[in-house]
Length: 338
Image 1 (spheres, rainbow, N blue to C red):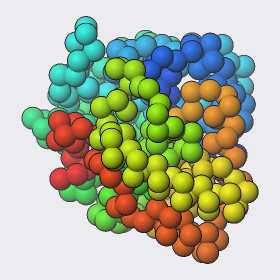
Image 2: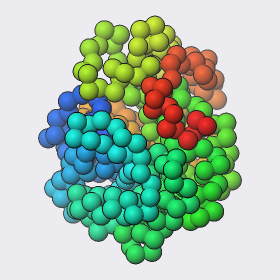
Image 3: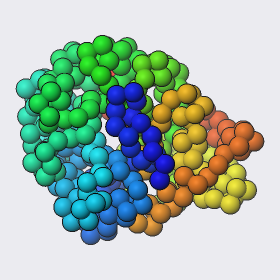
Image 4: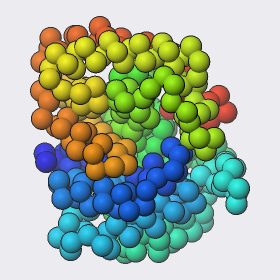
């Protein structure tokens, strides 16, 4: 597994990271045993970056990741780097109740995450969404205090716009910005990538398969559970879904011409964006099974020439997707869309 540095101040990580959210929440039922086996398989394959959040199923995901680390071989456990998001507020029914970026809350969230994960430090810590009532300088400053005390190693950001990135970077060193980035979500390229490049900040890209939409495995007639995020996502509704899956079929033809799967060419495209934008881009793959993990890891062996990139762009042009990437109420929380 090749490695990348998360910006000029961040750690060295694997070229692909593993996003663990789907093992606990938002995509229907998951198999705990298979999830843990998938984390172990990822570590065995050289994946070092594991991404989670304290609000994923109200702590369940952190406990699952902690269990996976405890039961992994010592050598593999020691290579793992944990990226943790915090700040999203939930109630006992699982409803969302805003975000809390106050310094006291930051330290409180961190204390509970350290306990659930069973570790003495978090490698990269970031608020999931900017708290509109708390200046980003205060939130980042609180994380910087955790860095000084050894509880956190590096500071990250999530779904933030260019102005917020600059303000945060003026407060403390920032390793990376986590943000959705895929063939069908390319808004990051306009202002955010130039800003991070100029500041020596990396991008950790989530949603690289747009929650399975462009994986090549999503069927038009698939029935989604009520607790599945996609049941409410604009891109998976009615005519939007039909349009978007037509894009996938066009991409499938390009993939077949390369002898790879749709998922592999979509992930390889995100990997290719780093060099093209003179920055570091680390895709987070949201595999929940060893089978899907193995397919995703195959993307690291895919080389895309200029002709391939042109064919991909023709199949899935920028802004070709139908529907926003989140429901309207959640879009309002994205500083990156401002």
